[in-house]
Image 1 (cartoon, rainbow, N blue to C red):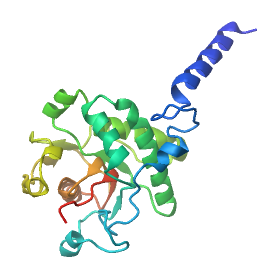
Image 2 (cartoon, helix red, strand yellow; image 1 turned 60 degrees about the vertical axis):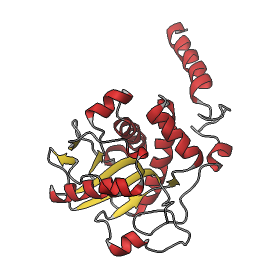
Image 3 (tube, helix red, strand yellow; image 1 turned 30 degrees about the vertical axis):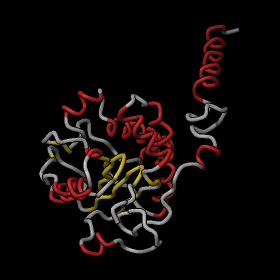
Length: 248
């Protein structure tokens, strides 16, 4: 009997039983990262603008902002509203070292992406909206970079070699250190300088731009324009959650 193989197998069974095969929120036994009960509590973004996915009171419309000036990205994917438990989990990741919540959130997003692109072509490259180095020093990590790594791992398991590629060095760079966006009002966010980012490397023709949350959409729109000017022909936006416009 191969005792080394047997002991390794038993250790893995204990490890997965205690730490992996359970819900990340309530810790009940579950084959998924979230049990069915906890997942039901997630605020799904069902009624939204057809283009920017901003939550609305009326389904299947273009919001006022998109009617006035439609953002240049072709597709926006935002399966949840930035409220309740989703807001709590993302804030925990960014401000309270709750990195373990990245796994369930990115797995849910990857499942939504696989469903969406079942009848569309996948982007060739995945680029994340980066944090400024000063912000990374404050938090100890860049949450969008870590989320992107988890997201690609999930997609690789389902798509094989067809998943979007990621450059060793993210082509998008934040040039200026600004006040944390969650501390700003909508008007102040929109007044932020538009030249906060720059593209520092060649990019693919079809690009996916990832961020954890889209609030006013000003950052996403600015980065989209930069990517299109740098040679991209199509930009798709991937976010975990979209913030309702509470000032309307």
